[in-house]
Image 1 (cartoon, rainbow, N blue to C red):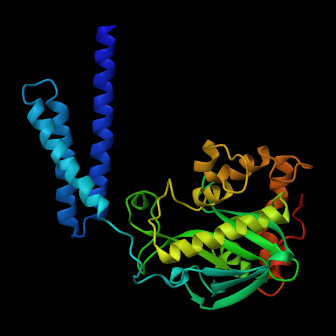
Image 2 (tube, rainbow, N blue to C red):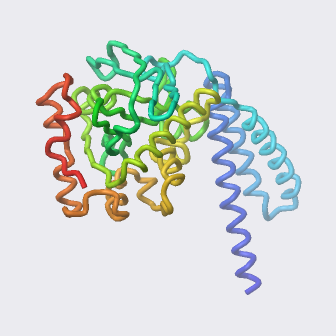
Image 3 (cartoon, rainbow, N blue to C red):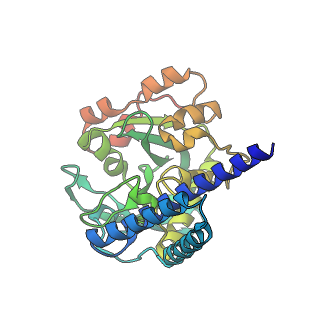
Length: 332
């Protein structure tokens, strides 16, 4: 038993050392404000320090090596804690403005709603608008899943449908700078900030179906207008907070799915964690199991009818786009 405990403690130590060394080395590589050679030396040096500690565990130099490592790690953690997300930068045009909202009774006014006309995946005619909505006319919520990297990963868009107005779609995205981009690894290390976009569906959905060629699926959500209103107001509050104080985007903990699930937790009794939240391409399966989607059809049947690319391409990015893409999609 004693030998087993020693083995377990040793294995735990090596695992913790490997994780901390990998994290610190990558943090230095991605976030040090220097050129490639300096970042490579810093990251490689920390990795070698971790290796030195690992090889000295069974020698008389282990305490000195461990003390040096702890001091270096503490320095990296302190530096890391000083990194603050920027509020101003040379943002890419499509994420240049953070939407904000004002609520007065049943009237919702959104400032900086995006309504771009996209010609290519990177080129568009810019339109930023202020729009007003009557919350008493809110009818429901729809979920768009845009698959761009296989069945495991998708981008999630939540849209709110009104009886007397076009839907308004909300997308949690990486706030890229001009010349920058999205990287699942780099965005674990404070490389980009978070932005919440409110947009016309012809823009945020249409660019994915008609311009980028992503596989977009539409699911109508089984909920009440009251809960839909509560969720919409959560989006507005989150957008206002983000406009006041920026936050880092994180590929695992603060992304298009986790941010929305955090909001949903404030208006429903229980949202159990599930591996399909991380592999968010399977989020429709999770939602179906939770009774959020139309249960009159099997999940396989529902998924077959959820694909909207053919309809979107046939209709084009013109007026009536939102109504057209919903024609053959079953509603609970």
